[in-house]
Every structure is written in structure tokens, then in C-alpha cells.
Length: 309
Ligand SMILES: NC(=O)c1ccc[n+]([C@@H]2O[C@H](COP(=O)([O-])OP(=O)(O)OC[C@H]3O[C@@H](n4cnc5c(N)ncnc54)[C@H](O)[C@@H]3O)[C@@H](O)[C@H]2O)c1
Ligand SMILES: O=C(O)[C@@H](O)[C@@H](O)[C@H](O)[C@@H](O)CO
Image (tube, rainbow, N blue to C red; front, side, top):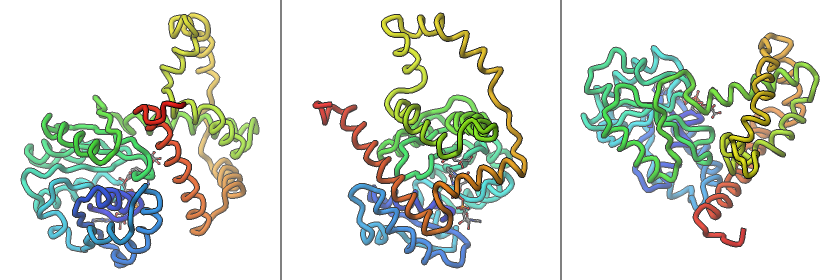
């Protein structure tokens, strides 16, 4: 695990919970304390996880070479800067085994760009394995190959599936892959509606949670459109509502993220959900409890484990 910040520590807990020996490296001078401080809350959000057991499988070191020297898979979680990741992976490649899978958690930088200056055999082992925060709770991992060898892609998909995640292979490298682009589109319209005074930030969140949030946790946008068409399915929906929806695209907002807008969004969000470390811990705990309950319910239905529903 290279990088022990928000994402790296969460991955470390999940990898350890899967029984893996995890070496975490980060130049931060409070690395050991950061691992010890983060584990209790991370364990609380991983069903069945035990803090002591997790900690016993995690070794913290400020020596990157030592951390990766015997790695089967390296998960990089460093700062979101291209030059930084290029240098970091060059160093990782110098010390990791020649057959190690090299995965970056990057939200928006593509593997081809990270590997641009690296040897072909290293680029063939490098891909994006992008989690959604928090990685130990949100199922998705976007697997985005660059010049990655097919067997490495398959290895990575199997690894994250065995970890209990939902890996989805993304077929083209685009900035932000898929989930982040969808999230960006949604946040753009959300900010536009709040900026216009149509709803407050908290009211928008309620609209989302009371409609699309639950809907898209159960069926995706296309299945939702399909079922919305009744027996006629998406064919009927396209004929019936498709044109209106397309016309509305022209009406969607293009808000400027200028100082007044940022101030308004920040003030409304902090008024609704608090601010500071204690508030973060309280809200994050609630988020994780709700998301885990959702995961459990949906998995139960998907597998028929709860046929009563
Ligand atoms: N936070 C999110 O919502 C989120 C979600 C998905 C993916 N990501 C991606 O995960 C990556 C990490 O994001 P984050 O939110 O955890 O950032 P973060 O700032 O919390 O952590 C980054 C860590 O990298 C460490 N670091 C700096 N130089 C390093 C080096 N040379 N070697 C090892 N570690 C080093 C820092 O000390 C820090 O602990 C980014 O690429 C980001 O795009 C973030
Ligand atoms: O929300 C998330 O977990 C993802 O969208 C992240 O990948 C990403 O850091 C965003 O928050 C910002 O792009």
C-alpha cells in the first residue's frame, strides 16, 4: 500500500480483513499513529472486522522499497498529480517484483499517462483500480487498463472480486472514467439548482436520497428507463419521454464555481451536516452504517438469501 491517507488506509484495512499481509508506506511522520488512529473506525465499517486482527496484518514503514519488495499487488494512493505518480511508479517498479500488479487508485489520471515514461514491461503491469470513497464500503472498483497486458487485467479483476468488491472494466481511458463523470454531471446540476435558489443544499440531498439514490442502488439508469416504459419498455419511454428529456439537456445549468457559489454551498452544507473532525467521524459512521445495511439488503436479495422480499 503506497500512500496512507484517506484511501490508502481504507484499502489497507480491507486488504487486511481479507487475510492479506499488508505493508503500508508513506513519508508522513505520524504513519504508525495514523494507522492506529484510523483502524477502529475502519473496522467498525467492515462487517466482521476485528481491529486487533487487522493491525496484526499491517506493517507500516517509511521505506518504499521494503514495502513493495515482495508485493503481489501494489495499490498506489499518493497525491493526485500526474508528475508525482509518474515518479512514484518509477520508484515502485524499481523495487517491486517483476510480476507484481501495479494499481493506482487515481480518480482522474489514466494509466497510459502514468506509464508514459516507463518501460513497456512495467506499463504492461500498470492499471487504474479506482475505488469510490470509502473503498471498504462502496462496492465499485473501476478497472481501467492502459497499455496493460490482458492477463494482468484479468488478475486484477479477480483480485478485487475476491476482496468482495464489484470490479467493472472500463474500455476506454477518459478523464474521470465513468462514475466520476456521472458524479460530476450530477453535482453540476445540483450546484446550479442550489445557486438558483430552486432548493437548498440539504433539500437537494433529500430529493436525491428519497428518489434517485435508492432507485440507482437497485436498478441502473437504463433499466430504470426501461421499466419506466411499462410493458413497452425503453422503446415506449424513448418515444414517450425521450424527446422531452433531450430538450431539457439544453436547459441544464452550467454554474461557475466562483467564490460566491462556493461560499453559499459550503455554508449551506456545513449548516446541515456540521464541520470539523468530530462531525466528520459522526457523519461518516452514519454513512457507513446505512451503506452497509444497503449492501447487505441488496446482496441478500440478489443471492436469494432473503427470498421473503
Ligand atoms: N478521497 C477520495 O474521495 C478518493 C476516492 C477515490 C480515489 N481517490 C484517489 O486516491 C488517491 C489518494 O487520495 P486520498 O484522498 O487518499 O489523498 P490523501 O491526501 O488523503 O492521501 C495521500 C497520501 O499520499 C502520501 N504521500 C505523499 N507522498 C508520498 C510518497 N512519495 N509515497 C507514498 N505516499 C506519499 C501523503 O502523505 C498522504 O498520506 C488519489 O489518487 C485520489 O485521486 C480519492
Ligand atoms: O467520490 C469519490 O469517491 C470519487 O468521486 C473520487 O474518486 C474522487 O476523488 C472525487 O471525490 C473527486 O473527483
